[in-house]
Length: 258
View 1 (tube, rainbow, N blue to C red):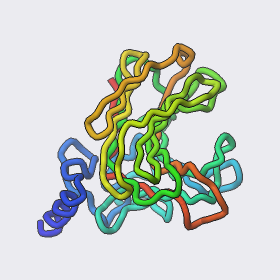
View 2 (cartoon, rainbow, N blue to C red):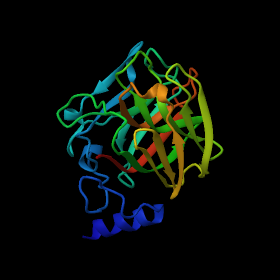
View 3 (tube, one colour):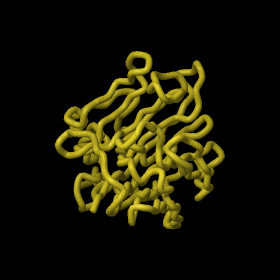
């Protein structure tokens, strides 16, 4: 009980009380002494790491992420001070063939282990409470990515945090490319904040940042595509440095479809 009280006090000081430990609907403090899978429901995620062979980053399946003794390493781990699920993406790291930037990032999966791939119809929400611990230039902390339906490897929307504190949503103009930036908020690096990225009505992106909501029409050119969520640290700068990069700590992360 004393440990729980101390953890709740720490969470409150970070501004994240009530959003920690998202294994269920009852809020409780995250435990610093377990792997991320002991505090978060990782049954619907797989992890991509900034290591592996060129063009083929290592991925960790959901089955290995789940539970208190689940996977963690230098790029994905529980912060021993506050229990945050932490992602580290250095400027030098293994990337996918379609990106120049390394990432430590979760990719949405279905509960049966298959890749999530949902249609635009219905309601789909990704909710997160987080803080950017450090960043060189800017980092993508959440996105809706295109799934099957065509040859595009683009996102539908990416949410970035810049080193100057600007929170910017990048909405894709079409599956062939071109992104329009929208400044949607400001938060100092190191400060906790929250976002919800959603899709409703089959044609609208609903983005809420710290309680302020904006809406963006989805161009009809995306209608043929299915989608999936991603969240973590997708660093947006590259160099030969393994010490510079983007570190992002999550205190809450949930996905809902209806």
